[in-house]
Length: 103
Image (cartoon, rainbow, N blue to C red; front, side):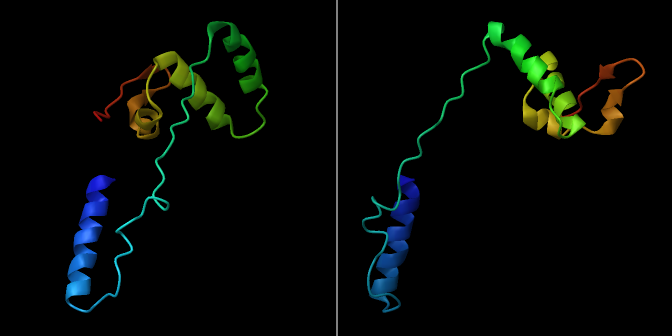
């Protein structure tokens, strides 16, 4: 964030020097640029997994959400890798997923 602020200050400094701006709004952005506070989500503890799976089975929304969540748990992969998966990667008859995503 510091580099962005410095770049903005340079741009506005030039703008003021060339009469394109009257003041530098980037000079003191401390109140506007608050530091993001990360909300760490702890992992699901082993004793909570059965309750979670029951709640997931009772989920009345999209069935794909249930399947994807279980696949994420079983394979231990990231959601990005699963969301980038192509149908050609899945052999449903043999229950095999050959992930082609390298990211």
